[in-house]
Amino acid sequence: MRPEPIISAIILVGALTLLTPCAVSGQQPAVGRQKSPRLSTDDVLGPVAQPLAGSKEAAAKPEDTGAKTSAVKAGEAKAGEAKAGEAKISAEELAWRERVKTAHARAKDLQRAAEEAELRITELRNELGASGQSAAYRNNTAAELEQAGKRAAELRAEARAATDDLNELLDYGKQKGFTEAAEPKPESEDGKPNEEYYRSRLAELTEQINSAQRQIQLYDNRVRDISQRILMNGGKRGGDNFYTLQLQQDRQDAQQKLDDSKAALLKAQSDLDVLREEARRAGVSPSLFR
Image 1 (cartoon, rainbow, N blue to C red):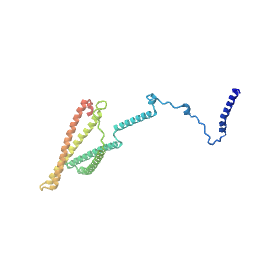
Image 2: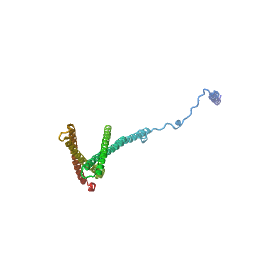
Image 3: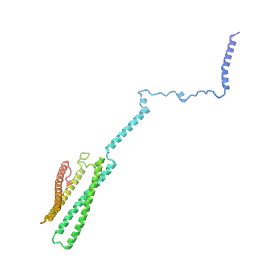
Image 4: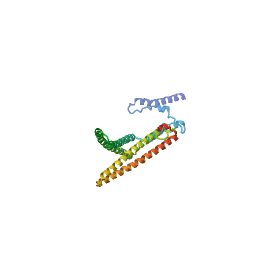
């Protein structure tokens, strides 16, 4: 037998053997049949290349960028805290400062009005005691004196109440750690003389001088009036010793306030001279003090 037929037969048998399982598989039911694996996009493209350590791409990782963003935000927060720290004045403290400023002005105004009313009473008394006045004039003066006495009593009560209100505000601010608004500085930020400072100090010292002069006159009148009462109460019979002692105490208090007012006047005048000299050396125009 020739070898060619044998080889052909062998090839034919092998081919049939290979085809048989495929036919059997095609006849199997769908249940339990294994699905053919499918390729995904990742399988086609392959793994994404990772940046090398130390490269620019690695330095720009999303997590690093987020860390930088957090750092920037933290820096901004600290800057905000610093700015807030510079503005240490709260809304409550600012409102308190305005109330204190108003209370100071009210207390001063009422105290001045009460003192002026008392001085007016002394003038009216002197006019009433002067000779050569008509009856109508004396009656009008007496009526005005009565009204002035009532008004002075009201003003003194209002002045005391205003002073009490001011002290309560100051005590509250002390408990809260508040401070009143800072006074202007002698020099501005550019190093030049601050005229606002000299103008403010001039107004303050002028008020102190006027107040001291007014109080000197007021307490001097009180000392004279009380001394006259002591003489009238004593007389030949000696008068009421208890009342005399009370008058003497009142005169002593008035004399002490008179001495304090004189000292306050001297100090205010001295401070004003110092301010003028300070302004002259700073180059402030002398017209500011005219």
